[in-house]
Image (cartoon, rainbow, N blue to C red; front, side, top):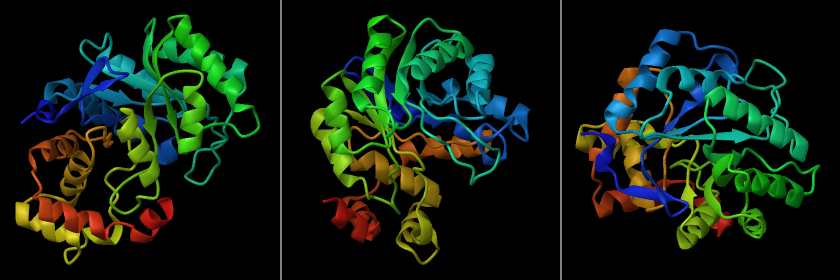
Length: 294
């Protein structure tokens, strides 16, 4: 069944999307640098998204860099019925997993980067623009201010944040309406539980990155493996089903470069966990981190 079976969410209380989206970081090369190893398969994966009812696509100018946005435009423009979210505020210094991704929050840089995103995606207005990371070297109100200017100018429809604390979200909300937050969150790492709970209270979409991670829990004798076996499902599908059940503002964006894996991920919307299974999974995930977050 397509992803439309998942409950919908309204970004910014008006832009409706299905709650299982797609993260386009992985349609790039090793270390998220350069083109993908199998570009044709990555393009087929992108073109399969609307056929499966996946209508939220998340990318960033740093992915590639630039390649992810270019491929999304080539595969899916003019994006009929699709919401394309992108991010600005990171530079890339190298083509491996350990090279730094320095944050750059100077207002003139954020404006220029946004203008280039508009060009690469070939749109007049970006559906959702997210600040990839707040730059500690620049007053955060300056970073928030230029984003609000871009929104007021019609270049951005909705604004979001990534890798932030509750305090930072509240500071940004003094300047603009925060529509989404994108932080790390999965079964194995729930350290940002307080951010998720804040977003749920305030009706802010929460887009967890690395949503499929489950660590030791996914082993055959782990709780994820056991629940997966009971449903004839994969550990990844169980992880996504748990996220979707965890909160009505949860917008998982699993990424992949193959059609087969995409179809497997989307099938997770048909996996209904019992309350007992959900509680077992919830209790097994990162209890120390959850306690610290609270």
